[in-house]
View (cartoon, rainbow over the protein chains, first blue to last red):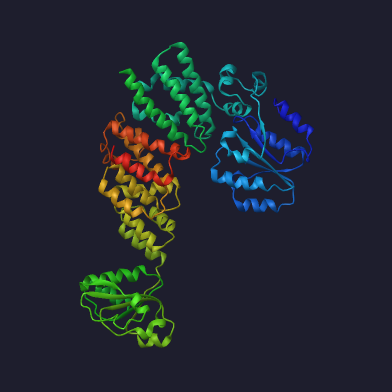
Length: 265
Length: 299
């Protein structure tokens, strides 16, 4: 693992008795939370079991009767309140052989009662030098590092041509006002790779944000500010657990189409 | 009398005035016969099951206006309450005592269990223009339960011929829903799209007690609206440019211009906001239908 020295040092100094039974790992998408869990499991000779898709009382019952020392991982990104209440039950009655790691972006995603029962460890942002260590392909490094600030995101973008994202973002902002409304609503499908991996949408939003910001720097106009504020608002909405990105983006495009048309007129 | 003879009489509008015992595993087919007999006799159906259970001796009094019908699980439990009267039918699942069978052998009509091939024939006859593979898929999704099948056929028959096959093909291809309440969703969204308030209200009453998947409603509505937008607001739309099949394109063309451009955009934004509002906790799922009704029909 490149970077995250504080976490690695903490793990090296810990043993099975001192390592926290309930852990909350927080950080941006692709920062290495799963990798760190693998490192924990390897160091303490545990099995790593992801129970995200089985957050039911029956699962907890079977865990309670397991004789092996296991690290149970829960991806908390799209977790519902109902599922969080099941986790709470899990956390309230930890057993000797049970270690739990809950992964998320930030503490606000979780009930206070869950966060309070966990040792919270936050991944530090990666430096440019650390991230360059993950780039083993041809690309515009500066543009890449603007939008991909974690190793995971760099890895996703390896398979795609980044300039296509910048080009599409620029087209949307520059040309939505002169496009046909029905055509505008087909833009989600035009984001390269979004059908295969919905994390691409989050990356595309970063690109859109930077392009909108650059346009303000180039020209200080009302419509450019409108774009920037609307994109920032869209980015916030995209953080809501389980939200459908297609509906969100279509709604954004429809709204913007009407607003920029009015602005033009 | 055999069922064949009874069916022949009914098909030829011959009124049947005799005491009958329908022995059947399920009620659907006997009920169809009861309805037909009542219709031909010009009588109202009077369900006197409760009277039979409490042994009311006046239960089968002469009443020229009604056709008395009882539904029982086991005829033998109430055999002593019976009287041989005209204008009476008993529908029962079981006749345990062989002596009862002998005594009433002339009155007992045996209904065969509905086999899959019978249900298929029935559905095929009602949907002659629909691809039989799609019908078979629907029958399987309904678990070959005649009640579910009839319910879904009723909804499907609301749509024009040209749309029925596409509806089923769409559902089958997307594989989104295993629960066939999607047809209810289609009826509702279709009524919203064409701004048919009466139809919407009628369906709202019907779906009040059904556990409809509200998020599924939004998915179907979104798809319908996008198709309409691609034709109504698209530049020189064709099946190729919109990605729709030619008969889908033709069917959807009937549905455009119910909303003007501004309304259509507003309606689209209402629908595409619902998912975010649901997941953000701003709106509970059980208010979706009312929300759509108010925002779409009043747009």
